Image 1: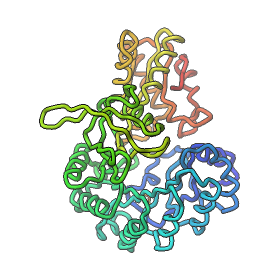
Image 2: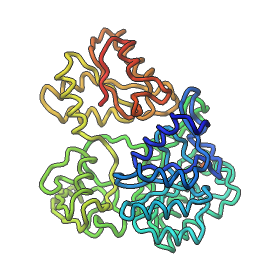
Image 3: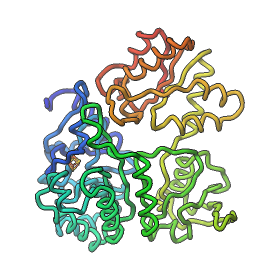
Image 4: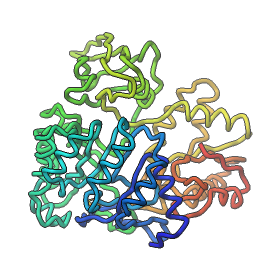
Length: 453
Ligand code: SF4
């Protein structure tokens, strides 16, 4: 990597502005399912060596305004690594906390380097949450699929987090190899019995660069595992990526000890109103509850074939996490704005959505009602992630060529359009996709206006 490249500085700036502080792309494991290995040729991905402490200190200004600061997650086009491999990780963490004493910190780690001293330090840093990408508790699976030559370390690390009262979550990539489902359930059980607040079961993603049968796990199998786990643990277990079927604000789980649990909310409860206002979607309901101080929630609970309605007040401060776990669906106001401005500006626009998002976007469009809802849903089309291939289906990994393929198909079918509305998730600040191609290529290739929603 050329560290003097302006492109890297731009990527770092974009990450910092989004509240993500990349510190290294290096990792001490070598998971066979690591997404860093799967990029097709042409992707503008960047790997960072451990960044210097002075450079990181100079970057801290760019985090101002973040509602939370994240270390260890993939940001923009920078490959994620294991943050705890950074020789100055603890110092960096303290530096961030000194500078931003009140902002929640989030760390994602594979958990293998969680020493007693670090767990103690984490417990002293105020509002901090750790996500451990555990994947498996089995020594054999960890050795074979994660290249972990000391599989007991991560289990000790999780016990230390628990002992020091550090809030943490777990995640498990559900793999078809070896013990498969049995191993995944055992791993969820370990997390639940060691105080994890939530567990995400991840459907493994793979691109055209991987032979698909190696990682192919039907989503329905992962959903079945989540249902099975939820029968014996109160820890919320969710499936990712989410594919919301509707916009109803139904609670998937409640975190132990949270304001939601203290108020008596449960999995399956449906939120009908927050402070008297009906939520348009799960995202809307969550935002209203998260931002509110002591929000009053009207709930519907079904039991024994009967529905019961009641109200509860959550004892929480504004911007304190309520402890409610819900799928991420769609921001209806964003969809409304996109539809209204497209209707104002063009006579025959078409709307593009990803495979994972299209169902929620269609429901959101239909909820606009009247002619607008009917008209926009009839002009909504799915773009396949053909550039990445495999089972990738998210908006963030679409490309200009994927959108162009949809438009070519519409032309062949005789569908007339004068503009295309595209999701902004796959574009950087300069309007370029992950291969560096600008979205304006859509306009020049197809002779239409392109609008970013
Ligand atoms: S721990 Fe994460 S970053 Fe490291 S190899 Fe595994 S998946 Fe990749």
